[in-house]
Length: 352
Image 1 (spheres, rainbow, N blue to C red):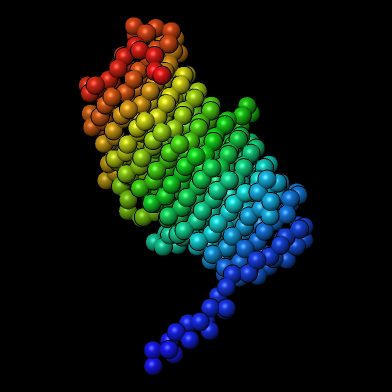
Image 2: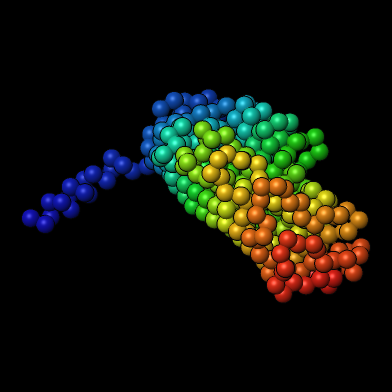
């Protein structure tokens, strides 16, 4: 009696085993994408491939390089790839460049109450997106449990990575480098009801006007969840290196965030910005941010105002603890002007 269920489960296994398809040409890729099955792995050989691919409603799809040392190169198109409601998707060891819209575009198919879950993007190289306008390296809308790991994004028009209404996700070990002629506004932007996201161990070099934009400005129809009263909440930004750009990070309509253990080198106008861009009824002011254990090196000849604080915010709810501030050209003027008193700050001593 106990054997029958076991036998039934064993007999069922072959029908769900994933298939692996070798892709060696653009035509073979197009053929494989006509009717992809759940659980398929596409292993793509080295070479040049056009952009402009779209996949919808496929689960447990993996698209990866046949040879990780020679990633396939997807050139041009509006988006290199657009994935809609592709649960448990994995993208690995790919190269994208020259898209006029976004490099990768991933979304929930407009089903705002049911996020798409379980996506992993790792070791993907993205460059030359735009170059001008709101064009992102990786655009994500309505995704939960997303991991972006060890990706490199160089030259983009809008955001390197843009989260709109994404939750319980991780961006780790990525590198963002701005380029002349590209109108980058941010390297990482978390907005539209985004919450419970960690950004860690990344390197930002001249990565837009706001390398890390915690919050932003989103039209109400695009919020996930609908009815959220914040642009972003419960964010952690830790152990990153941020070099250049007008500021290191902007807190824009965020409710509860931690910015800790980061190394900031030579912002060119401000160190931080505290702003409120979404002002709909019921929205909370930018508030409850902990800034601690950071090493901040700047030049007083460039940074005249340490914090750019806009109206409609609650800077009195911010906390500053154990940060090291060093004005390289004027060590005696290293102590910043903050909206609240800092706890155990260090001023005028060069960080290690």
